[in-house]
Image (cartoon, rainbow, N blue to C red; front, side, top):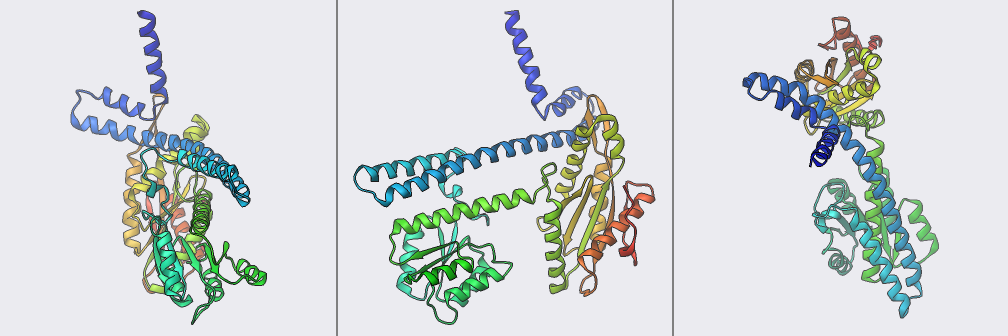
Length: 436
């Protein structure tokens, strides 16, 4: 009996060591019976550490899951390709073999989904709708209706009667896929395809050309212009669904890869590459609509002693904790990124300088009250902030000068004693960058 109890105690201890919420639970247990204010204080101290641990655990789980899903998806694709080869000469048992391979591929794809996730959600596109959104473009009403009937059980279908209408819907609705006829009035399919690819807001939308034309030169031209597939009429419902499903799956995998490539793995915020792309877009948008845009630069205070004394693992936890606090203060339209090392940058559209300063001061105060618990030692964290703004209606200033002004203000905050917020002043865009 005693051996069993000992095993149970060891198992519990192991679970506690692996549980990212263990320090928080311990703080709650230790605070039992104390006054409410003291309980709240201890929870606030332990919470950032728990958040950082959860973020790190989630990151490891995501990486493992992504590797598994990629392998399973690759295997499913290989099975589907094998099924197509077998089906090309399908008769009798060969047709049954092809069907068996397709069922196995479908089973593999289902295996990487959550058990409780409905089929419609498994097909959910990047825009977050319940079903993929497909734009069918054809000047023949009967052809549009036929495509709609085949696709509508699995997709949300939009229709356009010519290339001009297709362009407008592609920009306004941003579908997950466009089926494009070639011979249409006002703007033919190849011209519409070329314009879709030339527009930054629609360039990533996959387009399948659907046409009765069989000339190799036409097919080659469509593919050269950026079509992902060419479906020649007449075709079966089964072939149409297979081509659409394959294209949507490929588009989702490409979107996931882009998101992964633009995300900082430690903090879950965007990385520097994603920030630079977003910065250019936001500056252009602010100028076009004459709205203010605020940039906030942040740099952690005294992280080097933490790295030197406790190691970079603890330093990483501190960085993740700062990012977690920032994330809770951002609106849906705001954008946060890890600028590099222990630096962060926030973009606040439709936000004036004073509003940006208020947000930065709120984050600064929360960080000042944040403490990491590491091996019984309390590690304070904090940061300094610089705020700069492209004023409402201003045609002056560039993306580079906006960031440099925020960076110079941050430098002033560091010189003034750290753990504070400074707002950019005239001429700050030419300021130094020496606030390591």
